[in-house]
Each structure stands twice: as C-alpha cells, then as structure tokens.
Length: 273
Image (spheres, rainbow, N blue to C red):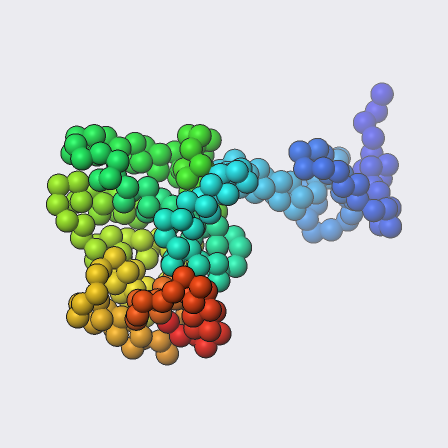
C-alpha cells in the first residue's frame, strides 16, 4: 500500500480544528504556510508541536495546591496576622494567594520558639522547613502539609528563588537563642512579597523593606523613622506594591478592629500608606 500523499492529507481551509480536552490530541488544519517542514512527504505543523513542547515543559514543574490547603492558609493568616491579612486582600489573584502563603510561611517560622524552648528541637523544626523549601522549588509533588502546598504553588508560579526563601528561615533561626533581627527578617519577607507582586523598582523595594521591618518593632523612634523613610518614597512607588505597604497605616495609632478595614480601604483609594 502506498503512503498517502501530501494532497490527500491536506484539510480544507474552512475545516475547523478539532479541539478536545487537555491531554488528548489536538488535530489542527495542515495548511501551506512557512511553518510547515519542507522536504517530507507528510508536512508537520511545526508551530503546533513547538507549542505542545513548551506547554508540557511548563506543566511538568507547575503544582496546584488544593482548595482545602488555600483555605487553611487563609484562616491561619486571618487569625494570626490580621493586619497584614486585611492588606493582602487588596491584591488581585493569584498574587493575593501568594502573599497569604508567604505570611503563613513566616508565621510558621515565627512559631518555632513558642512550639519548643529547646534550641536543638527548634533547629530541627527549621531544618524541616528547609527541606520543605527544597521540595517547593523542585519539580515533584511537595509534602502533604497545607502551608507547604500553598507555598509550593506560589514559588513555582512566580519563580521565587530558593535562596530568598532560605534567607527568611535563616533570619528566624537567630531567634532560637537570641532576639529576632527584625530588620533582616523584614527585608527577607519584603523581597519575597515583591517577587509575588512582580515589582523590582529600587524605591519600592526600600519602602517595602522599611514597612516590613517597622511592623516587627514595638512603638518607638526607630519604628517612626522607618515609616517616615518609607513614606518619603511615595511619589516613586509602584502602585502594585500597595498591598504590602498598607499595613504601615495601621501602625500610626491603635485602631479598633472594626475600623481597620475602613482605614485600609480609604488609604488604598488615596494611594497612601
């Protein structure tokens, strides 16, 4: 039997492509175009196969956390860090989920000294998180823990560097046998948050770092100086970073719980923090 000729394989220009569910074969019309591989009896739609190859490569590393994991993270951050939780709600999806995952991660690291007072056990716990980060940035399925799952989706979606995640763990490790370096921890978290928001402007980074560090301090002149430094940069700020700058507004005075959403909403409308 002779192989079918090119002519018999050609589909009508008016014949629609047959599209089926992902994972099945997509049969596209084979038309005479510069994208057909010449020199073969059976032309190949090169653009289509290049698209398939890129899609398969992307899907091999992407991980989608379950809705239950995302819900767990949302509830944890809402209870443990309400101010930054409310501010994160002003970010669009999927950045909002990414910010909440980072806040849950930061909260879990901060809990180390309350979970155990034994330095060796505290370091073992932080080492567990280092291993979890290694899985989060990898290509396989991460360990079955809701914060890890949500963080893994965030890391792979936004391409967060492993070194920056480890920097946040290292900052919290100082707290095992001493005081937390709030500047170091604040800068590490702010860098990750900016990665989720896709912001890399120098002025915005300086302001975000100052606000994150100020949020870890008690009232005093040092915190006031950091907030003033961040606000002085407001004309140069990328508006996309506002959800991580808004918590500064809640540090000016003690607000009642019912006032905080209104304060943040009004600040967001005016582009202030």
